[in-house]
Length: 436
Image (cartoon, rainbow, N blue to C red):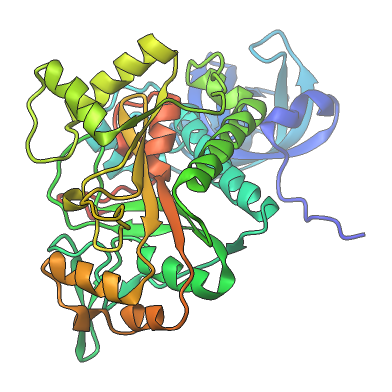
């Protein structure tokens, strides 16, 4: 039987190690110097504990190190865990300490939570030492794992499609152009075109990966690089199976988060999260727009404005006691060229899912008939020759298919009630931020 290497003892496990020798690694959160006794509070990702340096009990060199230590210095503490009348009911009496010193002046407050978000993002590594920030990314990790776990259980194949492509999935100018040797290529706006190609043989696929939008938005909900959780399914006839898959995986995600992130949710001031029931409310785009117009919310074009999305949440919360609402049957004008139209109409077999007043999912059935798809590319003002093998693949018995994408950043933001999507993104990219 293989045994994992022992690297360190986690602070969360120290209650079971009273009287034992341990090796605890972390950062100094607080130093209290009482003359002949120095206390450290040290943290790791699992909790915090106290280290006591008592003159005459620990070696003199350790005692002097303890007095001179700066906050946020990285430390490796070897010693014995003892019961104590202190927060947590235990402390470590050290026999050896290794310290990797931090600067005496910190550019950000990683413990007190007093720094503004832009400053925190500038010094993200320090920011991540705050247990509340750690909690956000633990929850995000569970969401992504639950997504993969669910679709693996349903017989889907996980794929990893290219981020560099000569195709532009959505058309338009909102792409990042890259020099690819002697060619012009683009960072993908989504894995859309490649997951479509994949279901032409693999039938059911999912992917979690980056997507890029060169949109000059400075809002709390937009990023230039985001993480997309995608599925694509062959042999569908309409959007009902896609809706069912979405509701099933969202319920699975919520159950996993509630079960596995009790500590993290508590850190973030969340006592519990409500598990949604299957069968989210559904309205057509036309019905949604009528409700928004009746509320005198300004509308430009055929997209539902952010204020309209928030109002729709208020409406369905009051009428159906739901935080979710499907908006289906969108006009072709505001959907991409590959969206399938209803026969004889300019309305598409498509849907968005709003969660607490924010769009977190978009998708629908795709056009799989070569001649129709080519005509729709032209209708959007695009050149079919630019789509190379993507378009050609539809000549060879392509199955009816569809899919959707969930924004991992937005879903994390909404589940945790965060104020800005950047809080749920490790190193966010927006029009002004490309570092760190």
